[in-house]
Length: 446
Ligand SMILES: CC(=O)SCCNC(=O)CCNC(=O)[C@H](O)C(C)(C)COP(=O)(O)OP(=O)(O)OC[C@H]1O[C@@H](n2cnc3c(N)ncnc32)[C@H](O)[C@@H]1OP(=O)(O)O
Image 1 (tube, rainbow, N blue to C red):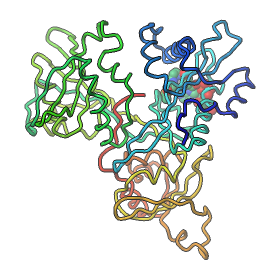
Image 2 (image 1 turned 90 degrees about the vertical axis):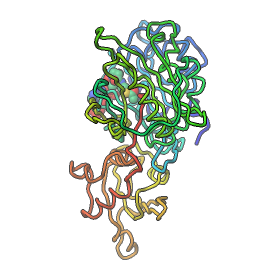
Image 3 (image 1 turned 30 degrees about the vertical axis):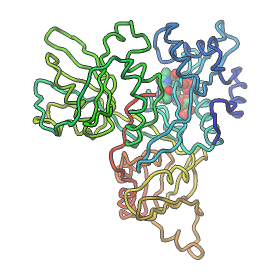
Image 4 (image 1 turned 180 degrees about the vertical axis):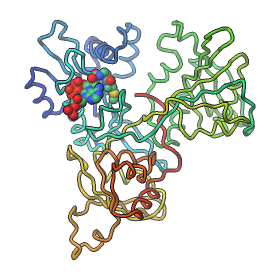
């Protein structure tokens, strides 16, 4: 794999397709602040956000310059320095069941200007980035989607689910374990100075999480504009275990909707242990005067309700698809994770873009490790008795991405006719194999 994906040239096929319509596809020089600022403003406009302040551009320039930053320019428009389309990508570390880590081509900032939409620009960019990722030997691509209808056509499918959690604090009686450590209020800059190390440990425990970048913590902790109303409203606290080692960080703000209704909004929550998880939640719930606590992008199998005397004090809403996965290399992708049981399964994969198409044999050992080989798509029973006898799951590449992290069972996808198995036993085997140690969860938008 390339050491610096940022510098790989843009895909030649997409360059030619866009040039045929008078558009120029290229990389942004992320050492050039002026060029980066034009791209950053286009990205913000594409997401219907306001003009970025110089302070925000400075922060993005400092934090996001490591990414592969691409744009499409139309030299015939008045403000030709501002791209009419944007995408940024980087090689992230995705945690997979095991847990283990696999490099993933993270795709973000996909925008096309309202003046240039629906003429194939996004398709050229999405397909171009997939070809670049595959050529760089990155086994899969990932994204979080603004709409659920955009990315299936490129071979992505949702692999994790998130929900918003809201606690009615007046109903709370703590009934869970007694945390062994202590919570300390710390200033945001102090929390920021320790969170990277704590977060690195936390995300490696949870399939579906990716490694973080500094700017995301700055946002959560209000440090991009610390003197703004939002910056000043952020409170941060640290959880130290019984030995005094920091094991968690939380950032939150209090929103007064009415003198009698005060909501505590969780902006950031990292815990590396069950003890730290309980300690930080107990602390948040112990805020007198607060009526409710709201946290977005939480896992659907949070233990929080089980720590309270009245589990219905916790309500869930906005249960949505979150991390989308697109497999490019089935062998490297499937071999990167551990499986729920031993067994052998053939996967007959279709892929309109060609990357992952073929028949692949997944053989899982007793320790959950896998070896994957490409086998003939048309097995000859005479010469390949194993292929003829092997349980076979037939699926489009999207659905391979869906089941990869163990977030949805093959049986459920088969019930929706999205995948097919040669027998009910094959489906049951696929369910057992792809089961993960916990529900996969990504807790940030990117
Ligand atoms: C990972 C992320 O960054 S998620 C963020 C995505 N971006 C946004 O939501 C910002 C606002 N939206 C936009 O900027 C644009 O509308 C985009 C990027 C979603 C689409 O850009 P366009 O250049 O118009 O798309 P393009 O013309 O290439 O369309 C390609 C295909 O996607 C379809 N499509 C495009 N946008 C949408 C949409 N919003 N919903 C459903 N289908 C869509 C098109 O119909 C077309 O279908 P087909 O080729 O299968 O017939």
